[in-house]
Image (cartoon, rainbow, N blue to C red; front, side, top):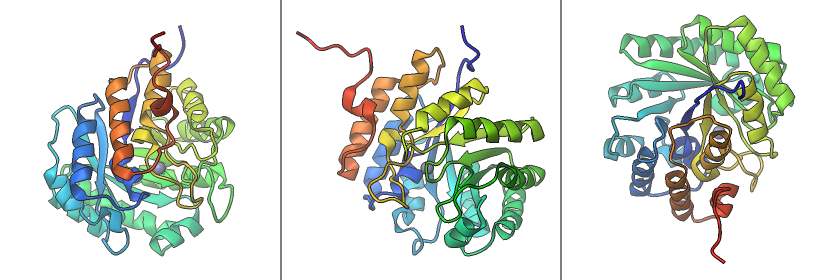
Length: 304
Ligand code: ZN
């Protein structure tokens, strides 16, 4: 029927990436959201990040959130770590999947973590070694993979070079993040094609933002290339830190709604995910950008 992958793996990033870019919410609300998401059929949840509370107050309660959730056996939970210290905290807390992050753009990396991309890559090499030594896996997220708010376009060769260093250092998977929603389908094909031809055996996750309305078009372009691992955020939680009022992450229920209708299975119950998005909207107290949350699934009929 099509050359799309028969199934895709979706990582729900609302509780971390989403809530980190919203105003702070109570610990208990985060716990309830994660528990709710754990019952939707989603198999991966990015639950927390272990960062300095002074740096990111929204994630100051990572230990309480992680300790407070009911971990579903069907779900694997991950944490984002900014440095070796954060990685140690995450592993000490019992996480077995961590994500380290580096920007392809040197300026973005300096603004984020106060050092250049190369220095972050050195640190990430140590994070990978630490994780592996303790039986955990480590994904490396390459952010600003399709452009930087300070530098503009980031050349494909530069992104592949940064990712390649992480692959060489033993990263279990690479994730390309479209931090500010600058990707379009042609650019997705260019980067995925270049990365795949150089590192055909590396795992690849894609993290799209819908800041400029191309989020699901980018997913479609990636599906056509056989990519089967995507991030999405319930309700589209998480705005764009560089453009107040703009949307960020693609919404999980929009992703599920589209790909399931194309015959690509996600394992996620669409109704349950829409209900979770409604919850997320209540927790955050603002209208979330998800259109499937507003309109309901395409199969919804109205009683005359
Ligand atoms: Zn994001």
